[in-house]
Length: 260
Image 1: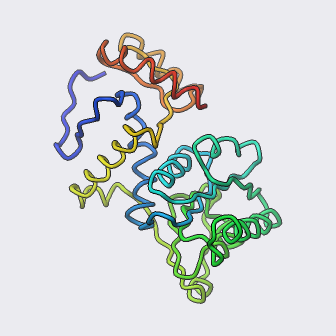
Image 2: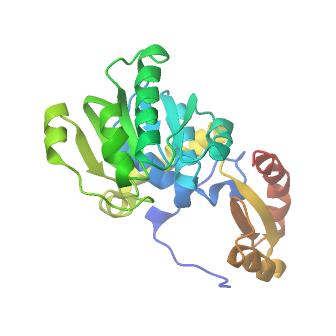
């Protein structure tokens, strides 16, 4: 474990006084990708309707929280019913299960389109889709859920990569864009810094709540790594280098952990 770390000034930010350091540990891991896809790529604005698939994962749940913090409605999609509780716990307006086959994808498509019109007043479909899944779900459901001139932001492909037919994109005038925050942040450091401070503002206000599992003092860092290596953690496992950080973050971590 290093005692000192050298970093550029564009990679260091001052956190608000009411935010524990432990809560910031997950920002780069999940929230940077989520915010980049929503703000920079998706260009969402208040009142719009966003569909997030793979919504029970880390980036998916971060996307839901940020979508709501930015004043939008959110439909969350998950692959199995037992995962529906997780998007609900972070504020999704509606959670639907798309399953794992073309029949369930078709049902999901119908449910999203009906909810878009009946519940959210968007009869033409959702404005933006944040897609973590791709695979067959993309062609079987997602393309039908987005409105004409809407956007699909590709963040991942947990169900594998499938060919995208350009014909239907042409007919619907749908924009499909890849979303990777790292290169953009290097090329646009001032805008990235602005994004980070906006996320810290949401964090200080309580709009987003990064998951913290356990906090270890420095002299127990081996236990922390063992927990991580054995995949027994939920959320982030944190190592605090200073005793005052340990004391400051213990109580907030209990609050955050209660959300799991």
